[in-house]
Length: 237
Image (tube, rainbow, N blue to C red; front, side, top):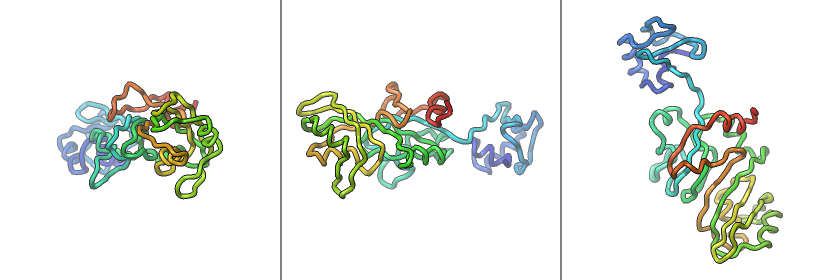
């Protein structure tokens, strides 16, 4: 990898700004001052430093966010704030994207990464990755709803969902539930309840595959995945 590309990718500025660092003799490779921006280096095997601080090479980032309402799951938007806008500039530098989408008013677990392979594996219908949601429902959720979801319900466009596992946490005029599904159709949870004559008033995603929302994360906050979380998510246990 070219030295200037490495430093730019690691957040040390634009190619032009990196050249400025080289002119200042601020960059060393294996303790030798380097001025050639086009020099090829191996960031894994070689010690690249800027002002004496070693450059830790990172190719992929993996962030867990507790998505707040009012923010959209996209990389950019002309009208609304996106989840990427909530990241610090260094994280944004890696050009990450949300894995799947949560509705604008939905809260909870959102994985943000620049690892396309992991994203594909989590979103592919063939992988059957379960997603667990907590919701408040306007209306009494009943055993018949549990059975309907278990069989799959027909949405407003005629699509019949795959079986969902519905658990009633509280039954009443405002019911509380947990729902596990393996799909990610547009507004799917809301539309599933609409199919049985009820309305979702609050929705929060709790988990995606093995990854569970860190409840210590405030709305809008995020953190890097732990190595254990990442290994489990990638089935590397």
